[in-house]
Image (tube, rainbow, N blue to C red; front, side, top):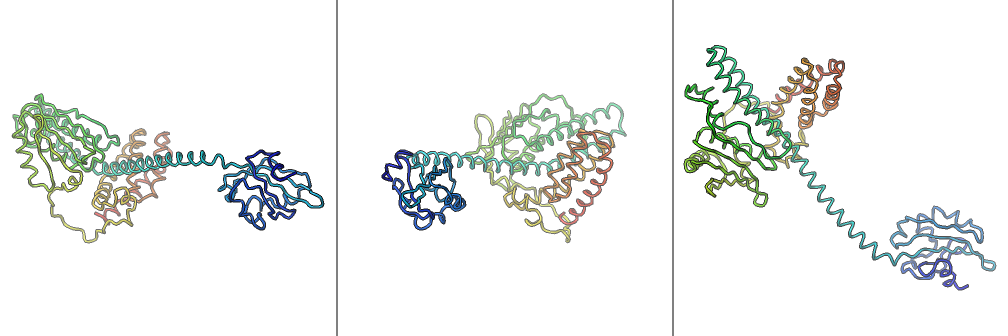
Length: 455
């Protein structure tokens, strides 16, 4: 039978017949595939599959067949073919190996189109993955900065409580009650601010306090103005929609100070938004004393480095701040005694922080200093929570303090914190009694050591 008819009889038109001699040497083929002319000499040298099965193939008896097997061989994969059948055939005194290959070239176009479509999906997925990575980095930065902000506000809270106690101890009952109420409002407002700044969720929030109550409480506590009271009916609304809260923190604090100090009559509303298209922060003031507010704000900001555009729109004053310019907002420098032993904060010492802050050295220093300030308070809190057997709070504090040790590249404490958090959740007092005290002692010593080096 003619080789071509033999091939068609077995597999039809969509097949390739390759004929080898008894030693596996290529003799000829029916050319339905273009590139099989490359089969010169021993094809066992070109195919990993054939090479690994050479002995089995050459040892076939005449009429014996190997059926239905596929090859993922790189050499054949490029030709879009699939091995299908190998048979040893005897013609006269000679033996031949007939290798019949299923020809998939007709499917080539479809496969290529599908491959391109898959690549498009892969590209989209990669873009989404990159966005997720960037958001996760931003989240970690916000968490680290939040630790610093937490301490910056926590310190005055502790001070206010101390002042309130020391002053009220010497006052008459009626006056004592008023001072306690004033300090309570201030500390409540600041504690609310802490929870918002430390939050990892970016959402619209409203402070539960009226702005005039804060003003009156500050006056009553620190200025000793007997006329101050807490009965005004003003509104204060703060809606913050922004990717990185640290970038607007300084500006927000100053703006709140302006409103606090100005004491305008009537309604005051402030709204913070972020315009992604122009990369600008838009801060809108709504007040029934707009002219005076503009003058006060321009006067306040004349001493601060930065670029702002103040405009009036729909009866309110809008303040536009470019995102790059907000980084320039800084308090006036205060002379302080330098520590000659202080070491520079370097990328080698804090690679993780440099990575998530996009190599921003100033931000890294802020984070390091903030963490070194706040973590000792957290460790003290953990000790008190354990003494009070408040296991739920202890677990939350342990969970919150973990990232701080990662930021400081003190990963040797991470496993200990995990163990303490788990023990607190399980209320395992025995484990905590054994491990908590030693952890707090060792961690505190390390923090003091780092403070001596970097602050």
